[in-house]
Length: 315
Image 1 (tube, rainbow, N blue to C red):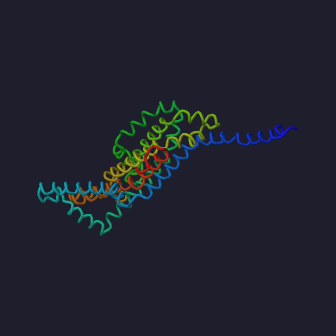
Image 2: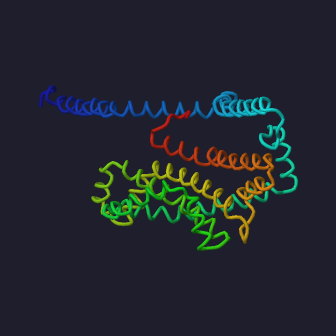
Image 3: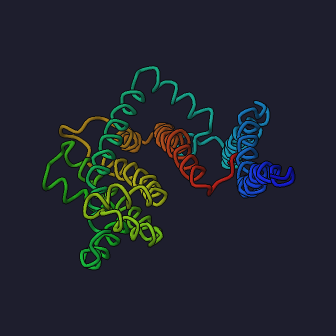
């Protein structure tokens, strides 16, 4: 065999060994941008975690503090223009002194604890009732056509309108308060669920049907996770309605076996014509609403939206 022929297999084998190399590089090119994007995301997240404390304070804490100081300044200016009339328009210092007195004798803490317990427990009951109801209505178009307008009407109806009926049905008891809270929160949560379901891409439902999901499996594993942004917005609105409904019920249904809450404190201040007590109760109610919003709902909503790529890492 000639030497040229003998060397041919070796050359062919060498070329065969080198042939896949361009293919491997070609396969690697499409993945390079994805890897680069992942690296940029990780770098941005790390920069966000290492944000200076001063920057966080300036961006998150300073604006509400400045707004609060501005509101107090306007309040004090109004009192100065009207003259010293603490029985009608007490100043910030008068309200602060009254709030300190109520805090010292335990009145504010007792009323706050009672209202918080009622508000949180009533809201959780409303969530337990409204979530399966919203999923059921969202999954059945005929049922939605039948009860959808009714649910929207109940959301528009002021929940305080239920107080007289609740007093007739349940008397002056905590059941009256919880009934009014449920009638204020449930329609908002159901409508939030329906709004979230309306925003689900139809491809997700078709994919669920292809994978064999139907009925409760489709609702709990596909529809509910996909509808979370609208559902969380409904929960936030439901909490606002339940807190407002609770204050209205405590303000009107006073006496009997109903415990002393912040709404009762409001009514007590009106009865004795002590405007400082009224303003102290209003500030306590407002503080609870703001703290629940800032410490619970806002972080949950931001984390949910950020996880879906709908919010920047610094938001």
